[in-house]
Image 1 (tube, rainbow, N blue to C red):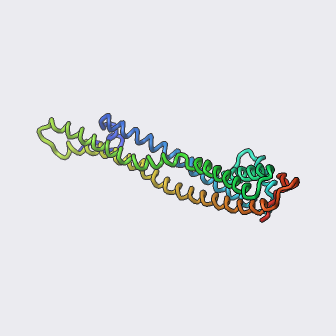
Image 2: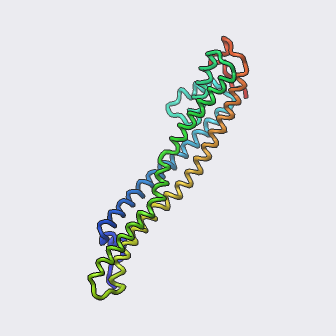
Image 3: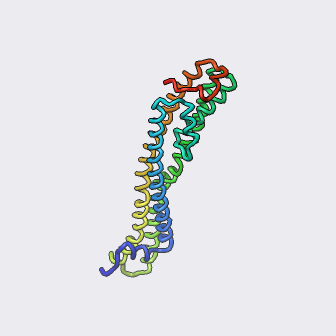
Length: 238
């Protein structure tokens, strides 16, 4: 009855393998929280920058003005980089006197390629949260099974076994499962939240690509001549 069942005492009295499992789970939990906070602020910044660009884009400025403004920025949002890749390819093909279909196809392919790069960057470290959330409970369970096995091996040398002799070893082992759940639950919750936010960002970017393609289509409908081949002649016909 005088046994110390505090978390610190249980961790210190656990076997080496169980302590190793606990240390690994705590490191995984620390890393996942670092990813969670980084992704939380990063996605918030991406959404704010995308919305700011869309407001400016639909304010009535010409495409050449928008392209120049994006080029002068030190840090751009994903939607701005998609816009820049599309308008750059569009103007390049326009200068080559290609037909409207070729201009639109080239601009769309450039924007889709940029979209995939941006989505890959936004989704970075998301798989780590999924791994922590799915693996941590099993790692904790492994520590618990090993700890219980170690405790029963130690009890085999005793002639009389009571609850007081069994409880400390089992309690020490169960701490590993508790730490595994402590690492897994926030990772799973954060993964689901970020996956939903990234889906919304992806829909926003895809919608912009379609809307921007329609604008380029109206500009590409004009046969490219000496004046219309320059970037300053490309206006936002909205």
